[in-house]
Amino acid sequence: MQSNSRLRHMIVTSVLALAPTPAFAIDEALLPRNLSPWGMFVGADIIVKTVMVGLAVASLVTWTVWLAKTVELRRKGALALHRTRALEGNMTLAEAAARASDAHDAVAQLIQSCAREAEISGGVLDNGLQERLALRLERVEAAMSREIARGTGVLATIGATAPFVGLFGTVWGIMNSFIGISESHTTSLAVVAPGIAEALLATALGLVAAIPAVVIYNHLVRGIANYRALLSDASAQLTLLVSRQRDHREFRLARAAE
Image 1 (tube, one colour):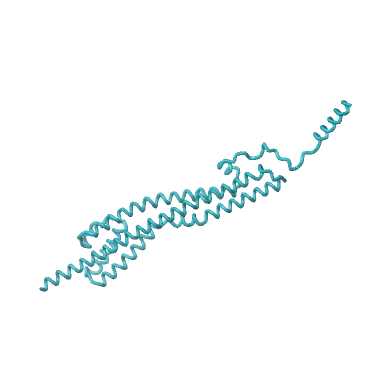
Image 2 (cartoon, rainbow, N blue to C red):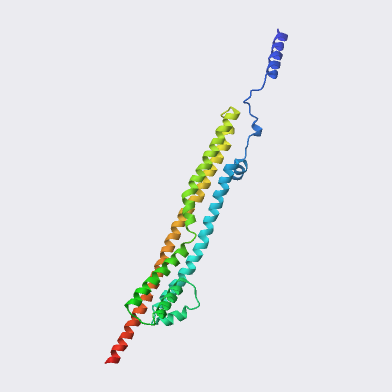
């Protein structure tokens, strides 16, 4: 009786050992286990890698533009404020032009433009000169505003497109997960997890690139608006300076006629 039971056990064990392994069996030792950000990047598809690298470069560009423009705005804003306050003193257009003769900042260019127009007009301070000065000042202000805003447009582009680029990486990673399910004939989490993790990483990188770009762009827009306001103040001070100089000359002529 005992020998028959042992014989049946040996037959069952032999049959199970000779049975073919199912096609969908997975060697779990070969499945990826490193789900750190770097591990997911290394194991990602080439398309997902390209998306991740592009978003990382976009984020680097965002912070580079922020640093460069912040330094530029502070330096040019402080210089514009200093020159604008100097124009509030009792000076003539010729004296202001002499002080700004060797400078190349925005307010200096406003002063130099006014001085050139006054020189071309033969030093005649009339209503026509003031109209021409207003046109010159407007053109210089517009040129300086375009110069200070150069480079900020890329932030708007990154803020608008980075989430969609990350979404593309997400779709591609999930698509790879479904392909893995189809090829392995199993819905095991070990098969699905890597592709989903790569997809979520692409989404996260898209947000990391887009959110700072939008915030920094809005911050720089406010700074540029303040800088433009300083240029407008400088233009107003130059207009007042020319107007005072004209009134003083007419007053002296009237006193001489008396």
